[in-house]
Image 1 (cartoon, rainbow, N blue to C red):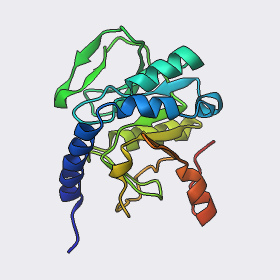
Image 2 (image 1 turned 90 degrees about the horizontal axis):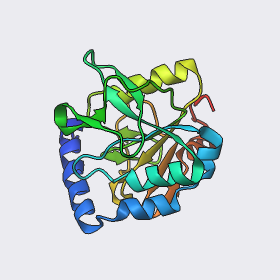
Image 3 (image 1 turned 45 degrees about the vertical axis):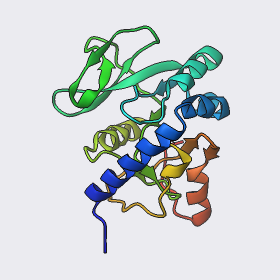
Image 4 (image 1 turned 30 degrees about the vertical axis):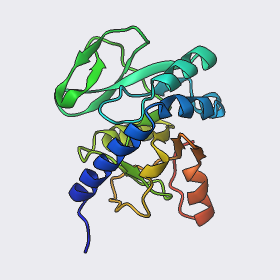
Length: 202
């Protein structure tokens, strides 16, 4: 029986909740293992995210990227028209409560164009397919970024969120790299070896 993406999202949300409960400090472990060469090569403007629910916490990584690498941090903001922009943010800056429990930069925060985008997810596979929340905000935003230049996409996840295969659609933007509490998974290299790596613009 084929499982719909809606059902798969529900299953993976429950699994992620369990993984987070087992290892609430995974974000710290992940930050320590993050290869700073990615910032050197694809920074300095980095889009991260503010965690909600059981999303793996990127805040330790944000601190490391900023303090050790001098990264120019921004966070996504979903505008009233449904588009996603990236707004400048630094630890200590105010965030606004937004729909779906999101915390996002204020509307008057400066717009940034990130070249390294760090994303949350519900699941991933070794082809770089990312199971998101079904709204398509990241895919549309990444498509615009790639139309204007280069962008490298790194997902953050628990190792246990890996799936054998995620159904991909033509508009889905694949991950280039996956970072877990166990270390790195260089997805774009795997696609290149398989002969089906997309043009990442990098």
